[in-house]
Image (tube, rainbow, N blue to C red; front, side):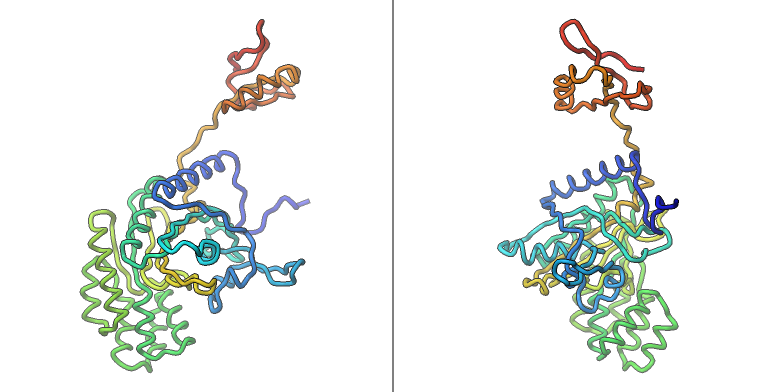
Length: 383
């Protein structure tokens, strides 16, 4: 029999690693809490039209789908928690008119892996800020992302920043159809210079030159001045470059910083700034975020929004080891006489393990045992 096998890109997390994961998750959520972010726990399964926006082909392909035996409607296993949090802010917390800060931690499921080493069941942890359109909100989220990774033990972080509204402004001004815009967007995501050149061959100037320039506009903050000379003066371009310059000033000296105006590897719902954290030893970003204003419109309330998320599984190899706490052995033959004392010890937070087989201290992970005493029960060393 081979029914113990798991699907490809799916893996168990065993006790020692599970302790690391739960400890890291708790530390991250505590970091969010002290910054004012409230925890929400969206369901693993929802109606598909709540999970995936119309036109979001990437998320649609990632989402497992099944039929609801009760309603007959199509359901989806969540592949991203951000749309769920947007629904909560828009619909369930609609009475809040000011800034709302929410955070989450939970499994998502992907129908296909994002990469060769990716899991199809990421442990997504993230934070979202709704209700404020100012650059200060983006800076708050970026700082929270960096602090979260640093506390988890990630060293030598690099922050890459882009702005999707610059591309969308150029596409609109150039009169690109939605289909052509989506195709060119994909070519830019893949850094396909030859494909980009072929796709924009018939586009009028100055937009053709602008699209060809985008892949070359990457590097330190000085590249933003270069962008001002190579991109046409459009409102979206001017605002995007202004916001990127604000990030450059605020993050100077805080983290290694680079800009990439063709860095469009965000999600369909992103509308402005996009950022990603990288570190030596990882081939891809270990956290991503950005602005996704009006993502709640389809749920009845459009609001400014910004946030980030990470996959806790990506950090497993650098999480500090957590030695299991040593427990107290109690022989099964002492029960039920010792039951009251066992309950008292457990109420105090002690781990008390019932030994049925006469196992060793190492097997039971115990360094003490509960033994009879003249006046009741006492603890004795157990080796």
